[in-house]
Length: 135
Image (cartoon, rainbow, N blue to C red; front, side, top):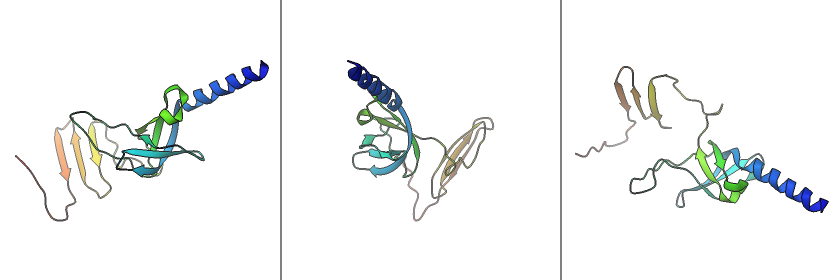
């Protein structure tokens, strides 16, 4: 009986510890929209990442390798987890920190920013060949 109780307590502690975990993206399967996350020395199975929209309206914004993320695991089971991007880290800090600005910046330097106080919208595109606009 004591052995069973110790096991049950250990299992509850494990599940509780796994409900919310922080790690970094280790691998990405773009075709399946899944990632493997490194949490300490442990690497998860393939888990889906959370996106803004996944119905008739859809968004695609894949996480990056080494991006810090949160793994949310129902019932403390990492195999059931979903990955919630992203958390700033020392390696990848925001380039701008403005109270009234919404900023979307890409690795190549392209950027869309909007200042809600001044009502200023700025688009910076790093283009190779063309810009396509449809009306």
